[in-house]
Image 1 (spheres, rainbow, N blue to C red):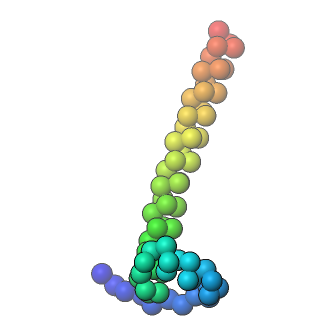
Image 2 (image 1 turned 90 degrees about the horizontal axis):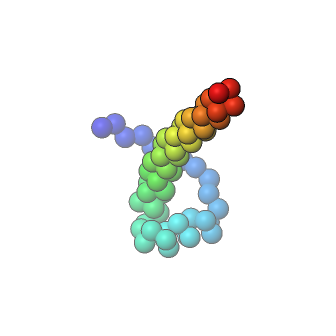
Length: 68
């Protein structure tokens, strides 16, 4: 696994809140936040696709009912 170092700017109060919520030091709290963001983003993309598929199925059913 390759490691990459990154820098960012974050308000001090936001960082303190993140550390309080996670109970971790700065480095670990930021890593957990990034990992959570990435996993949620992937999960939400999957949910969005499922919603679109469901909507398309509903539209197809309605079209079939209307056209007989």
